[in-house]
Amino acid sequence: MVSELKLSFSKFEKIVDGIAVIFANADLAVSAETEAALPGVESLVKRAAAADNFKGAALASLDILAPAELPVDRLIVVSLGKTEEIAGTDWVKAGGSVAGKLPASAKAATIVLDIPGGGVTADQAADFSLGARLRTYGFERYKTKKKDEKATKSLALTVLCAHDGHVRKAGKSREAIAEGVNLARDLVNEPPNVLFPEELAKRASKLAELGVEIEVLDEKAMKKLGMGALLGVGQGSRHESRLVVMRWNGAKDADAKPVAFIGKGVTFDTGGISIKPAASMEDMKGDMGGAACVVGLMHALAARKAKVNAIGAIGIVENMPDGDAQRPGDIVTSMSGQTIEIINTDAEGRLVLADVLWYIQDRYKPQFMVNLATLTGAILVALGQEHAGLFSNNDELANRLHSAGQSTGERVWRMPLGPEYDKLIDSRFADMKNTGGRNGGSITAAQFLQRFVNNTPWAHLDIAGTAISAPATETNRSWGSGWGVRLLDRLVEEHYEA
Image (cartoon, rainbow, N blue to C red; front, side, top):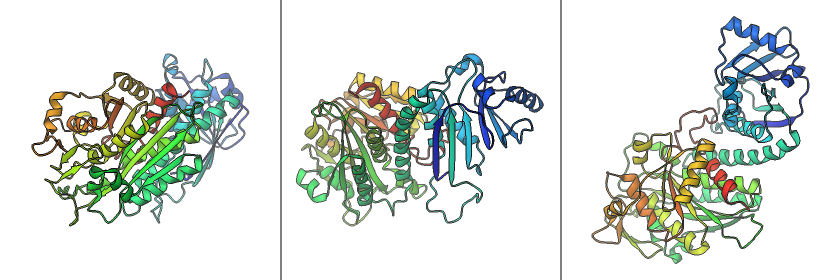
């Protein structure tokens, strides 16, 4: 993977050397600008395609080494499919696809971002750059021996396109989003002996460099506030729990109500006394994927100077089985005053979120709250890894999240809530219990969270299937996907920026 990507936009010009990437339709026709950049390229491509029986399906590529009639060392031709399909091109996906087609040894490449029959807009070109940035991410900081010693450490991509003045501005915005996604990926990929609660709080605090206001609550402060649910989860760990609140004040009206995002930050989850099976427990370093997303989102909003007041809050704990650990049968008192019977110490994320949700709605009175959590295995059974589970008490917020998911590819599927499910978490000994049993497990977890939001418009995203061990895509080759940053940034941009 590339450790440093240098991406720039430039006006159309002739390409005189190196690696060139061009686009064609299914019939291998190229645009006039492409032909001008590489005179004679269309006839060469058609001959090479005929010799290779290349069909030109969408995002299929033809790789031509040392083309005799062109000054470049390598020509990569990417088809966008049939003419009628080109208008629907996902340019983020296309950017990732092109970056993936470059040889590992490439140090530089020039891309002619133009299509036959019409130009590429500034936003489409910026989306292309976002896809390239996401695809070239890698996490290899703990490897002392690289698999491919010939792989480049730095890659310079020059994108030739129209609207270069406008595209630079849009490209800066997409760069901020990519940085946010890749920051979230970094946090999820880190090992748990490195990224424990205090360290995650420290890294989130670095957002102060971008103008984000940071408040870190330690255990003493949380105990004073009465956060017994959150503190109970971390009491078996030698690492102290933390609550980090990040505030970005970008709205023109300084007093405008903020939007709020809350993330589950369990830096390692053994299950506590209700200990998990040993197989694949190492994956539980990613049980802070919700918190990672919130940190990445706040980075993106601040870096692109979003015109919104936004709050990001992450509850950070480590769930360990110690002599001081929470037990099944314990009853804890949350900040809301509601009591919770602990049935299973592995249903810990909802306990963390309960106190953070209550704290944020009570203190900041936000327009809405969205929380993200790798909360239940049940959501994987229901939705696999193609959608995150969406639960909400507000149809407008749910619809906006669904729309943002469709446009970014970070898709959500709405799941039910209802009083019948709520009864499953009523406790004989306390106000509620922290699990309602096997049936409807992701739903009863959401019902639990809903008891801590009052009347605030709220959505819960269960990202257990999308945040970690995600399937490889054109834009992601990382175990930690950074899922949710693009989704929520789009939600803010389309509906809440002043």
